[in-house]
Structures are given as C-alpha cells and as structure tokens.
Length: 126
Image 1 (spheres, rainbow, N blue to C red):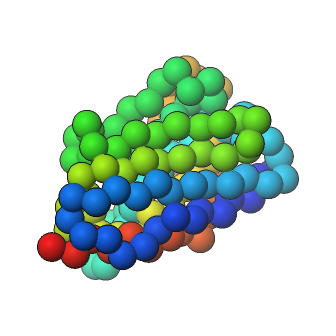
Image 2: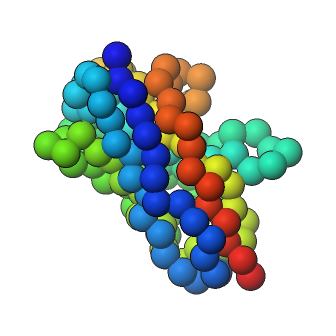
C-alpha cells in the first residue's frame, strides 16, 4: 500500500500562489490515480482536482478551474497542486488521496479513495 504526505500549505494573501506537494512512499505512486480534496471548518470534504495514472486526464471542480493545476511526477513519486489567484474561500485543509482505479478518467468521489495523507492547511487572507 501507499503512504502519502502533503506539504506546501501556509498563510497567504488573496491573489497569491501556493504549490502543494503530495509525496508517496511504499507502493509506487504510478499505481494510483491521485485526487486533491479540501475541507473547511464546518463543511463537508469537497473534490478539488484529480489526475489519472498517466497524467492524461485531469478533472477539476468548477470553483478552481482555470486557477489550479494538478500534475504528477511519477519518477519522483510526487503529485502537485499549483494554486494561483487564491481567494479567501479557498481556505481549508487540503488532502491528497490515492485510488488504484484502472480507468482512464480519475474518480472525483472521496469515498472511493482508499489512501489519504494527513492534510496541509491553506489560509488565504483578504
């Protein structure tokens, strides 16, 4: 199985950028689709972006489309979430997750992801 560790969160101002990393250990990350989710206080966990095993398919939530970019480097066993033009409503704990799904399009439902990191806090001030 795979273990995941997120990093790169922090406190930024609206309009700034951050790049989150999701480092994998154990089983190689290329065996999994990777998803990024976020959870704000008092709210349900929501899908942000996902990337297929090959990197060819990258669905996004409408709220981040055009601002966030998901990518992966299988040689480094790491996935990334580049976040530009951050808004206060992007404030949340961001979690990466791995899904051994074999399909070409990664899934966007959190319940199908079996492996999760501990999360990294992103706070965007206005």
